[in-house]
Length: 146
Image 1: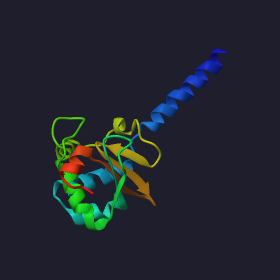
Image 2: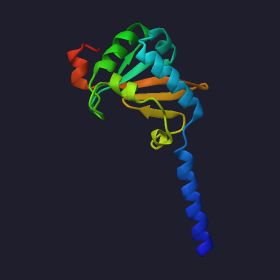
Image 3: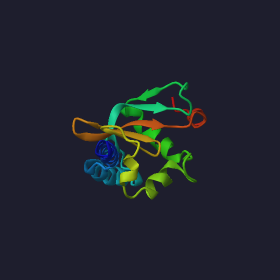
Image 4: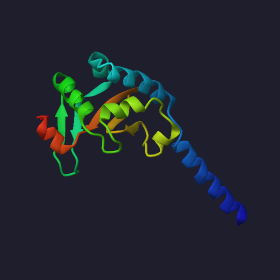
């Protein structure tokens, strides 16, 4: 009986540890994505994005918006300027401060998807892509993100 409980406990612990391991391909991708964002390299950022890019607001009931390449630079520039809800500063400040991806960033990740700050990335055909931005609904209205 004790052996069975011990085996079950070890399996649960190992599955938790497995889920919290950083994906090396995302760690490498983040370095390049972050650098492009900090340099305002929209050509590179465009190539790291799956279109249409989804934008969600503050509430689940807010309308979901989708943007094609032609609006990407406008939307992403505004995203970088918005206040970050998780820290003092903007989303650009958050990207600047997020130099390294660690195992803890993967604690809530699902297979082939991870959220960093107000951005969601997905592994698409072996490559990581930005698929979703969370932009405060009021900020969207003030900056005519539609």
